[in-house]
Amino acid sequence: MVLEAIRYKRGSLEILNQLKLPHQEVYDAVRSAEDGWHAIKEMRTRGAPAIAIVAALALAVELQNTKTSDQAEEVAVFIVEKLDYLVTSRPTAVNLADAARKLKKIVESSARADGSDGATVSRAYCDAAAQMLIADVADNQGIGKYGAEWIVKQAGGGQVSILTHCNTGSLATAGYGTALGVVRSLHANSSLKRAFCTETRPYNQGSRLTAFELVHDDIPATLVTDSMASALLRLKGPSENIAAIVVGADRVAANGDTANKIGTCQLAITAKHHGVKFLVAAPRTTIDLDTKSGAEITIEERPGKEMTMIKGPRFDGVDLDLNQPETVSIAAKGIDVWNPAFDVTPADLIDGIITEIGVVEKGDDGRFDLTIAREAHH
Ligand code: MRU
Image (cartoon, rainbow, N blue to C red; front, top):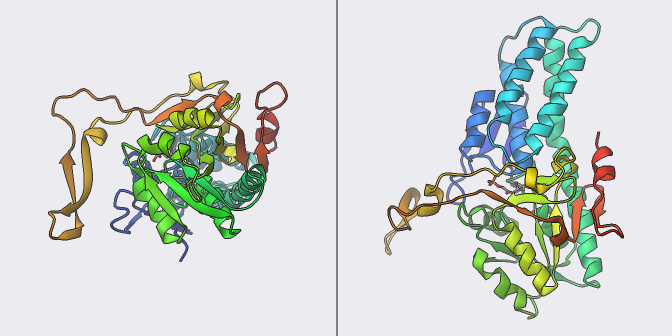
């Protein structure tokens, strides 16, 4: 069965509540832009592409289920205001802002068209939002294909092992995944020896979500803590010989600097030290040419309790009750906490950026030119 994080049909949107995974698979109904904003803010839906698509579709179902004005201009203003509001949910991933910008353009031009009324504008918006869901899956399959081919070629053929970080799979996208799409594609081609995934402290996207997806798809996989990455890269055994670290991205700046889940940069540093390839897998919607370098990227800081508390099923040594999530403290009371959700990996530590149209490598000047990849998307 294909793992579905976003279930959409005209007038209805449901998201797989990621706070309850891996213990329970519960779908939450999203009926409005407000519902969508809360689902994103509360981390029930996560991952840069998924955030953008859920936001866009949340507003689509609101429009489909509410009586809007007959006036094209009024509906366009309503949509633009809701999109501006949705963009405030989380700051680091660019996909949502990018989707909002494209959707605004569509509604504004629909409102200007001859004979346009409120229903026309609303329909133009909903069609474009639904198309984003379809396009993201196709983009991820392209990323998977190009990434897998590149890695196998670099490794000289045969089977490879991969290390990945955070969650970049079906749960973080419309389906298939970006970095995890590369893992899926390697596996589908019988080119994957083993996938290693980090736990991804402090929010545990790796152990809760990526591990869940790998088990779900029956992909040979091993979980490690974030602090084990360097030790893993030293191993040269039959399945522990890591050919590449592949991660996703929340925003790729024009120079290739990449914001992604906290812990990504230290993986790139250890990859460089051990001579292992370090790749970023992201659709072109994640490339932000307006952001010149990583220094300009706003990094979301999250509540300290995400580090000091841990949530899990109750386990008293006798009875494991998976329906009783419980929060326990794992840090000294009163300690100050710094909890940035993302970090920036400098472009010089990145060997390639895998997009749906191919792998972008550095030119002879040692720099990425992302202009061509990004502009081809407009
Ligand atoms: O804070 P989250 O869980 O939304 O962070 C998710 C990540 O950082 C992903 O690795 C990133 O969005 C890439 S998604 C394909």
